[in-house]
Length: 261
Ligand SMILES: C[S@@+](CC[C@H](N)C(=O)[O-])C[C@H]1O[C@@H](n2cnc3c(N)ncnc32)[C@H](O)[C@@H]1O
Image (cartoon, rainbow, N blue to C red):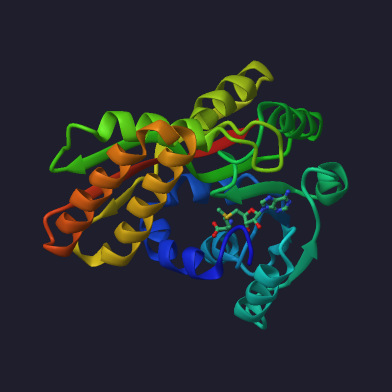
């Protein structure tokens, strides 16, 4: 069992694909030297590389780093023959410097809300010292818009946000504070930072993702506030019913961030 099951990554992939800010992605690749080595942190099954490769052009090379070998095997099979790349099993907590030593640009998708302030600041320090372009996509920012609204949404999502700040292996996670922290830190170091919304907009075509997301929110809310388990259970039941009858739509806020020097 992996921390990020491939089924979950596959389920979110089309919504991630629609949400990614293509203009920022183009600015990232435009800032790189010829034939760049682009390092993708927490690459999973390769979604970020697959999104960037068509924009980066034929000379670009990719390094996919992840501590989950099973996910990297899937990435390897998906990318084989389509571009120069290598997969590198490795723990980003232990060796971010070695993993990025020869990088021309660093990217990650759906990773930065999992990392800690301290870990991010070390990465930012490393990037400023070599003026490395950074492009971090699909970082959650804590916005959730559900239609119709429910009286318990506020309480449930407050508990969900507390759970998102749990330690995910990097120390206490930035969670929904990640976009603001990244922006502040990188600007302090002198970067030109651009941000763009990259929200999931889930309607009738996203029933499966909605079911999984809503169940995940309720589970996380119970973890963060066990005393409110009954509230979470009845909220989940109401939301499931609305998904079943097609009356629920959902926006999950994310941000894409580009930093240039
Ligand atoms: C939410 S998934 C995103 C995967 C992929 N970037 C995508 O957008 O589909 C987070 C990824 O970070 C990886 N990861 C988490 N902690 C890690 C660590 N300490 N070292 C390396 N990879 C890690 C997970 O295995 C997973 O593939």
